Structure formats: C-alpha cells, structure tokens
Length: 234
Image 1 (cartoon, rainbow, N blue to C red):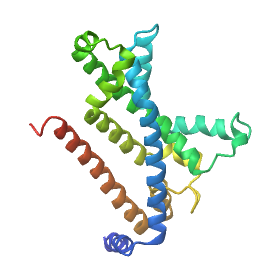
Image 2: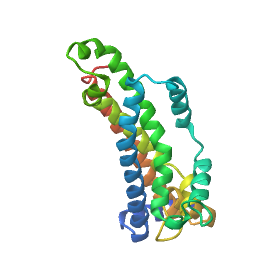
Image 3: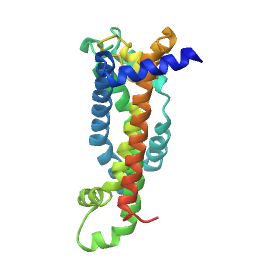
C-alpha cells in the first residue's frame, strides 16, 4: 500500500513539475492522433455522405462492410500496415516503418470507418427528411452533400470526437508499426504499457492521469455538442 501511495505521489510531482519526458510523450500522442483524425474527417465525411445519398450496385454490401470495419482489431491493422511498410513490403522503399507517420497511418485506418459510418447514418436520416424539399429546389444528391453536411455539423462533430477517442486510446497498432522507440515513437498508451512492465509506476500513472483526463474531456465535449445540437433540451 505504501509503495502504491508513493507511486501516486511521484506521478503527481511529474505532472505538476511538467516533466520533460512526460510532455514529450503527450505532445507526440496529440500530434499523431489529431493528424489521423483530421485526415479521417477529410476523407470520411464525404465518403459517408456519398454512400448515404447515391444509389449504386453493391451499396448495401458497402454499408455492411463500413459498419463492420468500425470494429477492426487494432493488432490486425497494425500487422497489415507493418507488412506493407516493411523492407520486403510494397511500400518499404518509403522508409516509414517505426516513424510517427506509420502510427498516423495506423490510426487513420482505424478511425476512418468510424467517421464514415456515423456520417453515412446521419446523412441518410437528413436526406430522408429533406429530400423532397431539396429536389423541389432543383438540387441533386451531389449538390445536396455540402448542405446536408453543414446541417448535420453537430452530429458529425460528435462522430469526429468519437474517432479521436478511439485514436487516443489505441495501443496495439501503434505499438506494432511505431516500435515504441524512446524520443521517436513513444506515445502515452505504449509508454504506459512499457513503464508498467518495467515497474516504473510513477511515469505510467502520470500518463494514465493525462489519458484518463483526455478521455473524459472528449466524452464531455461530445455530450455538450449533442445537447447544443438539440437546443439544450433533455
């Protein structure tokens, strides 16, 4: 019990003293996750909207696959990207393995289906609600996409926050493709796993506090957005 209390005390000192190692890990984690989520939003929002509004052969299959990919196993994603980026892989010449870029790619692959699937559902609901009105104004599905994306911006922001929550808490894929290299690819989740296995509980607890705070903040922001979009009712 004394060892645990001592570890908590040291963790708080690391946080309050703004330990350089702690800040470096936090900064890299935020950079990787925010970049991955930004790219996922850039591609996922129009992809989800297009699947929602356009009718094409195999659309139902695409919807099912998109929903299924929301639960992609991170370690499998990490393994596939590792094979692609390894020296013997088709993209090995790029030299991206064990770099922050590789971790961004891994998180992007995990977050994209979440953003796209939630966007599709939101856009489909809005299209059913406004289709007759939009068509009466001469709008085609393609021209309606920007309008519907703007109208559903609060719901879509919640989808993006959900993607960020997935990215910031991910450990398996980034461990595989990043290698958890000190001062290069060490993130909060991978550092927690490593420091715990080494018995360095203060640093692990300090990072755990930050990650937990970040998770609560993201979920709180999602709830605020949801209430704002409904006019603070309920």
